[in-house]
Image (cartoon, rainbow, N blue to C red; front, side, top):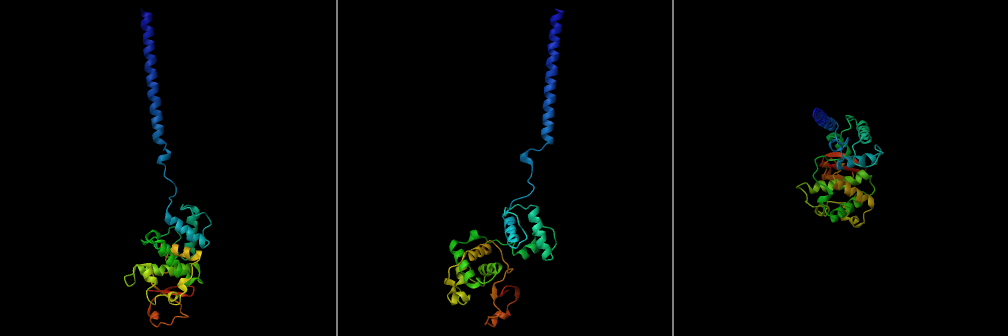
Length: 234
């Protein structure tokens, strides 16, 4: 009888220790899971945005950036921004704030995008860019497109691309028929950049060639910048 009681007691102790060991193991696993973050809770080192791609595209075009246009705001992109800022005497913080964006021709406050315009708008914009500025630098071509779009947003002008371009006596290329020339790939690219918000003119609604301008009125406008042969004004 005593032997049976002893065996039962030993079995009971074995069960108690087994349960205790299981609970201890579970607590240890639970504690480890809390102290070690899972993949889902880890934050990426850099974010991906369309704005970063826009910055990379411009910096690559100008020779500051040599990496891929991938939208990753990594060390190469930041270094390229700092190099650009150094060139233009800006604070070298690697951040594209208002001053740096303005120098890059990027309007941080623009609400315009290519999605707001039709394929015909894009075609007309490329046509006027090619007709008015095919001999200018790429930036100079984008600038012509930007002026057209700035006029669309200005209450003093028609509120459509077609209306602005074909407003009487607004563009020499319309008057002399050069608007009928077919735009090349560069003109289309410049149109796309303008439609996506790049404004090298900083909001100008006028431009002219000081060597050939005949209107006395144009000289009363305020010069903002000059790109190639064209003066851009407000």
